[in-house]
Image (cartoon, rainbow, N blue to C red; front, top):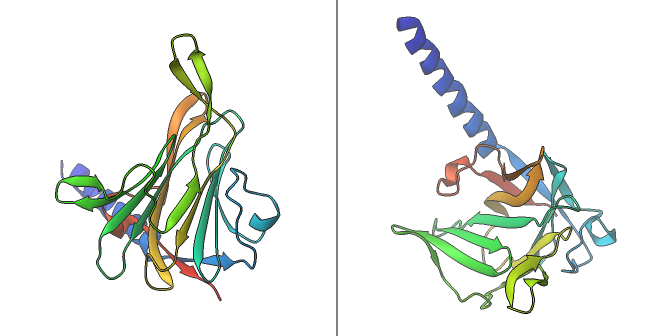
Amino acid sequence: MKIISKLLFLGAIFSFFAISSNASETIAINSTSKAALLDGRCGNDEWDVATKIDLPAQVAIYLMHDEDYFYICAKAKAEDITVLDLYIEHAETGRLHSFHLSAQMGESVLTDNGWERVSGKWDLKNYAGFWVPFSGLEEPENRKGPIWAKGTHRQVQASREKFPGNTWNMMFGVSAIYQEGERAELLYPKNAVSTDSLTWAKFSFSE
């Protein structure tokens, strides 16, 4: 039993340092002189300068900024619908903000009662994005069964005035993708928790 207890204790220590390492590392976001076109496609010319983070299942996150905006794009496979959840900590208030892009877009803030919307579905305050496009109905005669387009990429443009400072603490979640034939959700950092900003990663805006 003592050996098992020691192993569990060591495992907890390693887990702590793994999370701390993710949270303490600062990743530079490349700057761009060309504003991103929110067209559901990243990897084209204006995204060539972006900082790229590769995730499993052929998923990639692209990040870049200019003087006024922060840009993020989540790119997955042709058969994926791709849903993006972007989390940003406000450096002055300490409040955690969530931006969800699926068939709708919205912003939420973490409160004592959980995540609460701070705006209407399309009342976008200092941010914009490319959501999952509608592609038709499975039963058009009954107007049932919405079909969502596959193969497009999720994009968000957020005003840098919305969150102060040149270093942002963030977390990303990408879902509605397939990994080894199963639906999956990927997180960055890998062990990040949406309600615990200490597990997130810091990103700095390069000059």
